[in-house]
Length: 376
Ligand SMILES: *Cc1c(COP(=O)(O)O)cnc(C)c1O
Image (tube, rainbow, N blue to C red; front, side, top):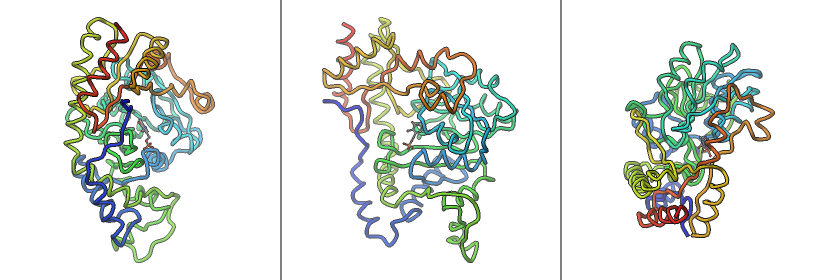
């Protein structure tokens, strides 16, 4: 059987976890946590990188940092994970959904402006499959209307748009190290990067339960106290130790994924040429990280048949998001502005094929052959 995903393992994880266990500090921002954060600050060129327990937590921190108040409107695509929306709903915001583009499944930047009102406070582009949104146009809109931007770059580590890392365009960027992502911190984990320096100090406070503990540790205040709202947004050193073992091999993991991705593309090219399926398209100005290899079939019914067929062949392929505006909670907390031309119809056609760091090229061939057999 070929799993849809296996969490990435490089081999160095156990040693680092044991090192963390034997160290005097197991709580957040210890030796491994700091190493990871410096790595991201250097790699991404951001003002500050703060590890979090999840991308969900990073997005929740963003909503607090932007001072979201009940009634504020937050614009995002409906084709995304629930946390993108929930983080803001928790602060009382109303979610405003805009249609996606067919080619990348990302928010359609040309449809955002029509959804902006005087209650709009934040734009949340989601870089689906690690392929960048049109960040130049999105930042122009944000500047024109004075809006905050947090990039949901949960899937976007190591990807670029116009040669600049995803996550570094908005005021904030949120990443995930869940086991299904390209890098994991042992199953669950995340990262908030701060690009707007004005948000940096408050981000540390919110993350430290609303206290100025990080300033205290740096010797900048002589005792720490309650200064703001906040919560517990630090991961443990065990998670950071796992993540460090992955970051040391970040390039290797990325290259392996890209080679698997390209192999799929080659293997499935004949089916694309025959018009049976569509393969992902990567805009010229984007470099992606092979987070996902998806195909699109004709319609929902065919997708169900293909998924069942693949399962019978021992291939665990899956579909992805059910658009949030069609979901039960979506009806309560959100509104879709403009026509849903692509969100529902394109989401119903999409299948994600197995792709993970320790997958073999033989397995790519097996999966591709199974897909090909179905169409024969
Ligand atoms: C995975 C994912 C999240 C949530 O990440 P967690 O680390 O599991 O909280 C949020 N948004 C997108 C687009 C994701 O893919």
